[in-house]
Image (cartoon, rainbow, N blue to C red; front, side):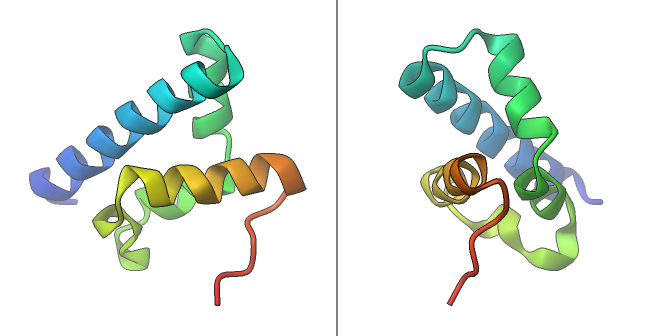
Length: 76
């Protein structure tokens, strides 16, 4: 994985973590656990999905739906 892709993934993770903490009142440990244990993160981390090109808001929306539904929503 290139340094540019890794940087983009880390930036998205930072923003998503901060939003989880803000929206749910979680501490950093709970927010990071929710993110890193998710299918959304697995897709974000896989360069073949191209998810790292998306905005942090888009990734957060997918993650919040996964947390609500227990699975990643079907994207149409």
